[in-house]
Length: 138
Length: 165
Image (cartoon, rainbow over all chains, first blue to last red; front, side):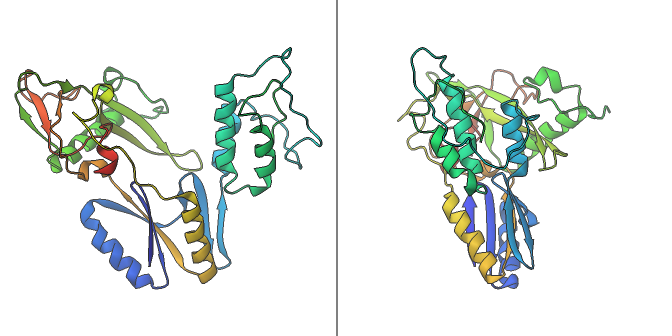
């Protein structure tokens, strides 16, 4: 049996279901709530069925879109523009580095379940998390 | 009792919530949990000691579909004044690396195991405190004589030592 601990969030897995219920029973004395089968952990949605385990971050992705006011943008099939060049020319308007880096941070966490975005997120993160021209949204 | 139908907002001060049943209730739940844990004892503040202020933090918990799951009130210590070596020594939190979580889920998927989930209610309230820390009385709740302060037995949220207790 394996137990993963994230401060106050526990995930428990193992071959023997009886072991898991026994462990849960023992943990009850620490005033814990049993949330049953894992369905939502660290912002990641988890679906468990006979075929396997499916992870997604749909709600998290929507939250990012809302925070950057891009909820109404059209979806696209490719995560970035082909041969996109991000410049650091001095005469162009600079984007706010704090906001820019915060968005990159959010996108990096989204890469957990969207490895297809990894390259695009890497590209926008190239110049030390700064940029003059706002890049195309991945 | 007023029902909170439109309590999507997270209030910033106690004054805003004292009239709203759902938030009052959430504060009661937190106070109950603190009482059960014997988090503090009411005492006089010794000379040359400082009592750290407390404040309430309010949070609306939602599930992935944005449905409101619960209203949560958390009593936290305002610890900008805590000094290293005097009020606290080491600071760290126990977390699992995301890679570890990924490996565990992959293993479960591979082996066809179930993954279960548990969570600790008010985790920090379980931790014993080694340093002596005084706090002021919680806003909105009177614990007798106003001149008294609280000496902590257990950690409160916000304290530097909370994550490792």
